[in-house]
Image (tube, rainbow, N blue to C red; front, side, top):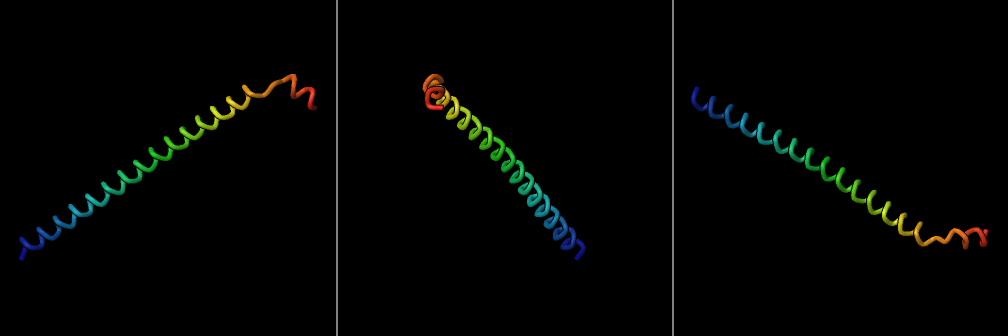
Length: 65
């Protein structure tokens, strides 16, 4: 009877540790993914703005205004 209790409690402790580790890794992975995606889109937007800015002719804009 005591052996069964020890086995059961150890099993529950192992399951709890596995669940906590899984949750921790999932949260950490999401945070890393989110930060990388935000950085990637900021770089993309910056490149797009730079490309558009190079295409604008200052003299033409002044004439249009």
